[in-house]
Length: 94
Image 1 (cartoon, rainbow, N blue to C red):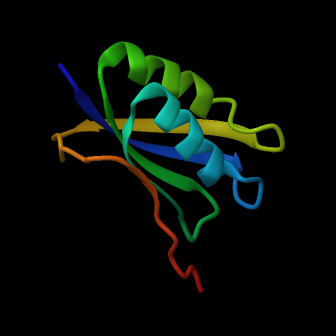
Image 2: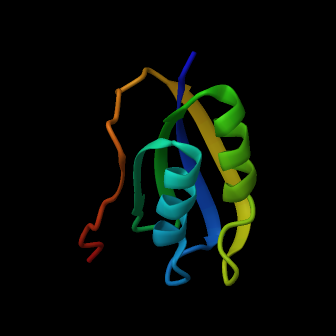
């Protein structure tokens, strides 16, 4: 049974290709959802997947891409939104 997680990744996670790398990993694992930068410097992810795939995804989120320095990953379980794919959301943070 799929689950939905809201994930906030903190640390040096902007400007290091975190969003693009997150999409690549999500696509590889069959994760559906979204990722975007937040004004506070964190990255926000909504992810939906089977528990085993979600566990692998969360492991990756704790490491991130090569130049990232992840200091914390916060997760909250929520209601399924039935995303059809995984998208990078580009928002103007100014």
